[in-house]
Structures are given as C-alpha cells and as structure tokens.
Image (cartoon, rainbow, N blue to C red; front, side):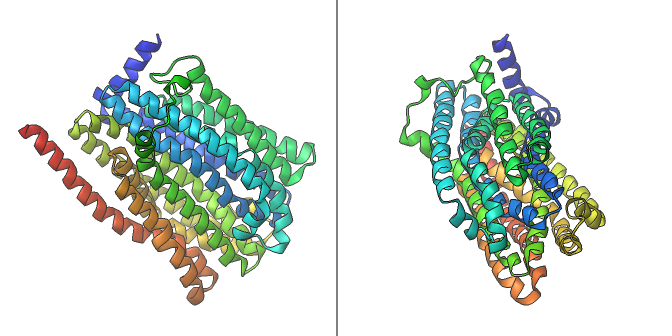
Length: 459
C-alpha cells in the first residue's frame, strides 16, 4: 500500500497535469503555512481581549524572535527539500534519505542550542528588537516561554518541508491545522480560565506546536514515506551534504534573519512615537504574515514540481509551472490588496478597539502595504523558483536585497523625512525595489534554462 502511494506521488510530479498537480501540492502547503501565521494572529487576537495596548505591543516585540526561530527550521527544511525533490527526480533515493536525515538531526541540535541560549539572554534580545521600558517586563513573560519551547517549532518546520519535498503535502498541512486548532482551544483556557494572561498565550502556542510536531513525525514512524529522515543509519554528516543543503537553505536563512533584524529596526523606529505605534506595526506584521505565508506555501508547492522535473530534464513542465504561479500570485496580491485598502479601519478595530491611535496608524500602515502586494507575491515566487532550480546564489541575492539592501536603509532614512509614515512605507517600498532585482535575475535564469534544454536536444 505504501509503495503504491509513493508511486502515485512520484507519478503526480512526473506526469500529472501541471495545474492539478500544482493545486494538490500547493493547497495543503498554503493551508499549512497560513496555519503557522495563524499561531501569531490567534495569540494577538486573544491577547487583545485583555484590552491592554502594552500586551499587544509585547507580542509584536517577540514576533522577530518567533521569525528567527522559524528561520532555523526553514533553513534546513527548505534547503533539504530542494535537494530531495531533485534527487527523487534523478532516482537517487540514497542521497535523498541522507539529505533528509542530516537536515532533521542537525536542526534538532541547533534548535535545542537556540532554546537554551535564547531563554538565557531573552531580555537583551527583547531590548535589541525594540522593547521599551514599559513593554519589557510583559514581553519577557511571553518571549521566555516561546523561545524556551522553540525546539518544537524548529523540528516542525524542518519536517514540514521534508514531507512536502516527496509530495506528502496533505499530511504536512493536516499536522499544521491540528496545531492551529489546539492553539485556538488552549489560548482562552490558559489566558482567561487559568488567569495566566500573556504567559498563557505562549504556553498554549508551545503545547500546540509540540502536538503538531508529533503528528508530522508519525508519518515516518509508520514508515509511510518514500524516504525516512528518522533512520539514524542515513545520518552520516558530510561536508558535501551540508553544502548542498545550505546552498539552498542559506537564502531562506538570510531572508528570515534580515527579516527579524528589519522588524526589530521597525519596532525601534516606531517606538519613538509611543507604544501605540508599536502595537499598530505589530498587528500589521501579524496580519500580512497570513498572506505572505500563503504565498510561501504556493512557492513551496512549486518547488517539488519544478525541482523534480528540472532533475528529470522535463523543462517544458518547469516553464508551465512557472507561468501558472506567476498568474496565481499576481491575482492573490491584487485581490488581497483591494480588500485591505478598503477595510483597513474595520480590521484594525477588531484588534485594538480600545485605542483610536492604534486604529488610525494601523490603517495607514495597512493601506501602504496593500499597494505593494503584487510585487510581494512575485518576489516570493522568484525566490521559490531559484531554490527549486538549484540556483542558491540568485535566491540569496534576492533575499539579501529585499530585507537588507533595501528595507533596512529605507526604515532608517524615510522616517527622517516622513515621520511615522516613513516607518510604514519602508517595507512596501523594499518589495518594489526587490521586484526590479527579481525580474533581472529571472531573465538570466530563463536563459540558463533555455541553454540546458538546447544542449539536451542537441545531445
């Protein structure tokens, strides 16, 4: 039964209708990635019911740390997934298993180290990410638990991407959904019923992620996969294996690290205008993370499909996959942008009904971001394409450009001329500049794809 299921998944990558295959791979991935974002939004929503602007702002201060934790799992998971999908296309199951095991066990070790170090130095980290004196004690209560339980998030993200690399997107997304449902159930229990406040929100998140991780791991414990990253016999750390993983994982790591740093800089810049401005930024980051994580899910769905066919030298299928994801990402960006621009004040009232300043500033920030959502989608697709095709250098340039070369300078410069509006404008402007870079890199990548296809036909 397992062999038949594995053959069906490989057949989907190799011969399935591109549109249908992309939907089957992306829909669960989109749901799973949105669920990861929902963890943050759910916490913010239930914490907002405390009617405490400082508590809402505290969740925003911890958000960059949450992103930083996720970057570890994404680095190993997405790096390994790109290698695994291409190796499966080449029928090299031994290297696919070796890559999966190396990524999983290494991420476990790094996650444990991060939890210990992060929990020990939590206060300096929170100050670095923009905690004011009035926010620090509240953020410490929330952040210490989140960071201390980070091993579950790291393992979750790694397993999540390994599962998707072999086409098991449904199981992956089911695990994420289970975690989100548990978080929705446990948040009010710990925050209100047990009267634990913002600390309860953090505990609920960690427990939910632990349950989700166990469900993801059960797929391999039941020996249902085409590969099995838990088999210790496959774990032979080698420089070549790490190099292959990091070649694709480093762009993700750079994007996430720079994203965390830039969020911290944004928090610091917003903090000049008071806790309400930090709360407004926090709510917007959480809400737009829903859309961005959905787009990352689409990018994850294209990776096994494009990567497998690139390894199998089915370049026509690669190009068709790329055309479809560009259209879908642009459509999502247009639709979401219109909704966010029109309903920004109403959305902000849900999360901060007690503070008109948060509503006003948050609405301005949301409308600025809404104008850039088509570039956001295309930039994310460019990164996913480069990683799927094994071009870590282009993926790294794009990631470093959007979060580092553009966003960080913009958030330091624009507020000097436009005040708090400059803080809000920095991220959307960064994506517009990144789009220009992405177009140039994609055109070069397309030429490489054409050259490989020509060589194959002539050979």
